[in-house]
Length: 251
Image 1 (cartoon, rainbow, N blue to C red):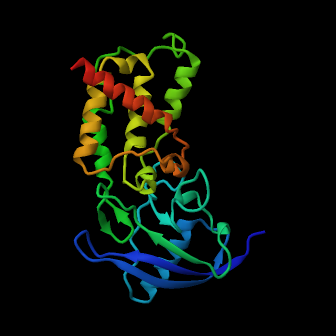
Image 2 (cartoon, helix red, strand yellow; image 1 turned 30 degrees about the horizontal axis):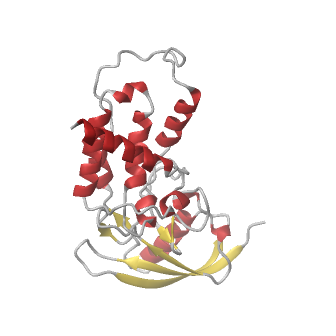
Image 3 (cartoon, rainbow, N blue to C red; image 1 turned 60 degrees about the horizontal axis):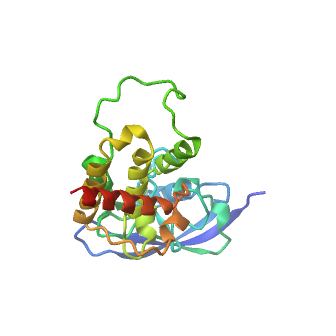
């Protein structure tokens, strides 16, 4: 049965991308363990507004674990200490009475802070725009079994497409690498015949854009896979490397 707990919050506050930020401390009493982490932040903001203070800015949208907007670094983990969930799916029952919870934004050169806990993740959109799509005319939508694709290939493509682009992989990586995200988006097309037509251009352009936007190099620590809320496999990174090298050999 859920109970109410008292918690201490250590939250990163930053007025703007060029302002110097720092941690501020808050306390909340009688927080239901049945509430989600974002609902707890809503309670904090209501308290701050009633006190005439600025609320904490954080990103969210669907609150259903689909959009990936709720990108918070909680007690040293992207999306918090629970496994395979986004921040909006994290519940306060994961914390105990008297706990101090540290909340930070994503830390990466590719994700500059907009304000407080909200970062600019438009870099991922730019990577997708560089090649994460199919532009050739593939005709109408065929029946699912009309194109002979081995089930194993189709399953791997679907697993890669499960990436929601939240950026947890970047936040978890000591180098701020976006390789898991890029490799998932390349893999979801590279594994299917519709995506093979533009495969070489896609791999080169997306990797080039990733490097241009300031993301770091992958050193295969595996932290990205561990912290990914959708269990995207680092085997996709190996596939991206193969696709990229094949494209370079063609050149």
